[in-house]
Length: 305
Image (cartoon, rainbow, N blue to C red; front, side, top):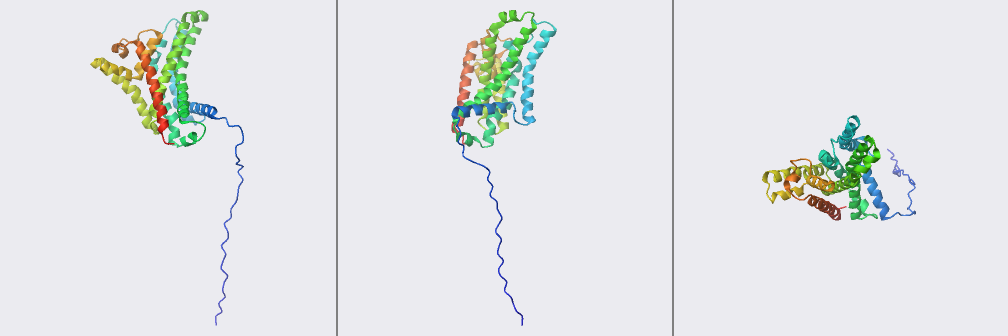
């Protein structure tokens, strides 16, 4: 007769676990507030514009484009040092014509990175949940973009100005004779940087996709320049001539000539062919800058965080 022995049910062993004290605690220090948050966002965006704090690949494109923008000034300084300081192959009022496509390319690289990364990473909600407002965010991004563009528009011209002064036998005499060029240099650089920044950011902020933003910015600068040229030079009617104000490049050329009080150096210039007063380009440049900044602010008023 078999004897069956009942076995006690096996008890499931409890899962092992650990509790770790990570040291999190509530912040009890002084809260810097809205102004400090704005400046922090500005400096962080400005660092990102030059690839600082990021990998080497992020620094390559800004470094190359800035170096190319400096090249005309370096060439002029080399000519002044080797030949004669009186030889001006490159002048301040014509500098934009030499680097305008570089400025557009720099903007196309920079703007999608300044405003697109936060949209791609969906981190806008983190900004808007704190002290900073949507308008603050837009203005901080614009200020960072403007500063970065000002570096590439103003620094080469200052290098050219003081380099020419140092190449002359008498530094002080050069400054006395050409000091009136300094304020126009600063004015054209600031207005050009403001215009390019507003147009670039207004386009780049509409999409988180870098490729779409880059293509859109290039179209806004290059295509409008070509289109305005065709309308002014080929059709040449009172209606088609107005398209000259749709080209940021033409606006920069016009208000640069107006500020320096000279005519455009190129006899085939679309600005000359259009026949409008040069002051009109300065007014249009300011209007486009304000409109672009308004579109940027409006975009962040409506964008989903």
